[in-house]
Image: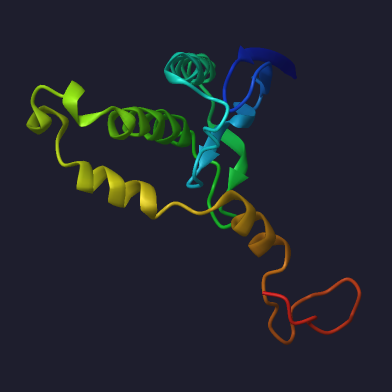
Length: 151
């Protein structure tokens, strides 16, 4: 296992873990899996640094990429690298003032991008949904107790 420094992703000084023998990258906060990205600590420059970090992860040629922020039911497909990169690009296009776009047609329909961004999960809601999802009668439970009603 090798720690790989990535620089700025959703915050400063991030890293990922690479396990080349099995083609695994534990991306931590660098790649998100169908969850809205945390962009509060970013600006145009640091978002480009984040894209460079994703390029670095992709250059490791992983067969699986584990994201810290993901929908629990999603697999760890390396395609999340490109999905995260595209989210950042879409955010930058939507965040730019309309006056800077000489021809909006060259960007495509911003409505399409907005819809693509809207269907992602919320980081906090998805984490708790995975922790407290409703169990059905007969589900194997370690404590043998009943469902506590959280969902």
